[in-house]
Length: 123
Length: 407
Image (cartoon, each protein chain N blue to C red):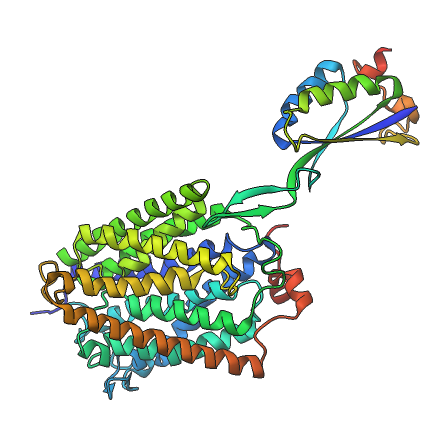
């Protein structure tokens, strides 16, 4: 089985998380900039005078697709490297993936996720 | 002997270029503070004034402002089309070609209506704005300019001091901004959502260029490359510096030292020193700038904090009140030791000057507010001042210009 991790983290934590994932052996990932809020609600910014509230804050979303059996350790690594202990650390969503197609070769499923040195190829 | 002084003329030409750049600089100052869907629209509201008012000024604006006096209220049409305005100096600036004076003054006529645009950004219909600006230049700017600076103008005649346009430029723009904002009404979502500035760096850039341009604005108003011009440049710089620091401190007391606040403070200091730049000492300019920042800061807090009126970019608080304070402060701090052609203010034993300043400022306040209110109302009934609600949601860049700032 293949799963997709969608981790929404603090922008400033991206480098830490990327580095931790690289050490774990995650070769393929992509990142997008998103805006949103959770329990943290928003942030207060300084205006010309006083402050104002912004309810959608910039966050970074990391997308990773990997095999089931690597899921838990990857989640652990993301949690540890993305955490500050403060509200606003983010959230991780996990989805089942029906299929994967590699555009260049047409490989499907697990084959398409086979990268040299990747955590999924080791086991 | 040729009465034309090459140094004076060169300085006035350079000062004209400096003041010209202030209008696109103002566009950036304002553009950075609106949402990204309205950046081009906001930049253009300033930029188009260069084109529109340049034409108006050449055709008849200069003449209404500086033509032969009619009852102290308005100039005649003897300089229409700039006829007779050439290389020979005028009564206004005896050592430079008359045309150089007219060109320098044109830049003031251009930036003044551009200042008002901060009141109605993000919702004004462009077509109506063009008509408004033309009417405003003709019905408000040209008369008030004549009252203060025109030969035999009524406010000049009673001895009102306005070195570079505290009343002519900033009071008229600031109080007109308030009147227009009351007529056009708030932006959709005002008070509920916070409108985040799209590019504070643009505002910093704009403010920096405004500060530089102001050396031409105030220094050029000496109309000569002399000690008074130097003096005006120094008081101008000092007031801006003091105001930037005070604004920073107030912002820090409330939360953190806001960058947008610091540059706004500097602009407010520049506004406030404008009427007195060539009449007050550098130490007085320190006080004028510092007090101006406090006045505008707390005015914005009250107006914005209570959502009283969506005078969107605080033109009234910054230019209206900054200009008003500057005009009154000139009546307090002016001294003939700085400028023998000026007068002594209240602190130099001449309370009458303060009353003159008060009267002249009040005339500017009432006239510009009332005329702008009426013109805006009439345009609202006839052409409509605002874009449709869905156009406002999409943003004026797309709905009014069919362009977007960033691809």
